[in-house]
Length: 400
Image (cartoon, rainbow, N blue to C red; front, top):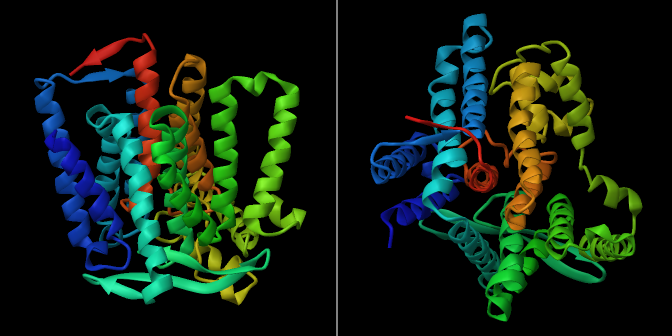
């Protein structure tokens, strides 16, 4: 098998172990950079040192350079010291370009989906094992669960698997569940049904309202586009009704407020505080690593002090200002609308990109700016959408 495939699997493994292990620090970062570097070298070598750069690639590279370069501006302004920032903008920019442009060129979309559905199943089975043997460790990786919650008279623990929080676990399950739905519907058929069942059970037992709502929304988009029935008003009404009932069942509540705002759990205060803080530094923001400190004085609840915005878009807006915010949002929006224009792309890739772009409204963990497993998955959903766009467009190409 292609050695780049194994490098990709290692990237998944190392980035997963950055939660709560020794790989969360510089060692893990260095290992990831080496793996991405090798992947890029293999790709360049396989192309005989000739790389095609399309217009959308140029836009992505320019955007990454702007976001990373803004941190240098903050050092110059004295908002961040060189010791605080280190090489963070450099290596995160490298990872962003690798995931958005290079990885989708060397690992096919089908292999990515294959890995996603099985990766989430493994995480779910690890989490479910705590129901039998309790919490435990594997090579310093803690497999944990939360206290039980009750939905419709069913009391079950909240699964966390290798993460210290159910929400990151649920975020992985969004992609894994979507990938397994696609595998059942458009690829392997009933033989992939066990993957789908396990993924849905894991998503349900995470009890993460935001992730469940994102999944329901994105799977609805997937089927509406896949079947072509989005043109039927009656069908759309039926889908909305089914989605509403399905969401109520998953969230375990008929409270319309909880369904609409997805149990914000204090996020509303964090968002308002973030916007108020951004207004004081609207152009270039406050600089990375300072969001929780910056918004702390503006938060009324003492229990929320020390928390960041819990919204990737607000985090970028707050830390890089309107310049970085528009650039960051532009990468996602430009990719989505470019895909819509091509009309014959892979719907599952569009649905995944919509899912993780929406999830960023609730969490920072799926931001495009980072080196954890969720950052990489979120980056790849945009990257594979870009690859799909390039494969279906006839645009000018630059060769380097």
